[in-house]
Length: 114
Figure (cartoon, rainbow, N blue to C red):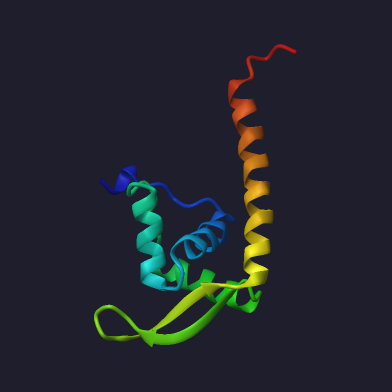
């Protein structure tokens, strides 16, 4: 079934991580990746290396915060949460994504007249 899974578009992972943390509260990297896969009904596959690179980048941008905690299987893990700056960025990223998606939808429906 791997052939039915889509690659995540460049630039959209930040948006999905921010939205997941806003909706779910603090999560560790594996939990974020799994939640994105679940919400996509397994249509998206989130590579573990990619999610951790994204998390490091978002911490550096101060869009998310990280702190150590204990996971559900009693292991030490970093838990990530969205920051105030991240909430503002989520709004901007969502508006941009909706604008781009609307433009692409119009292009796909366009019949060449006008």
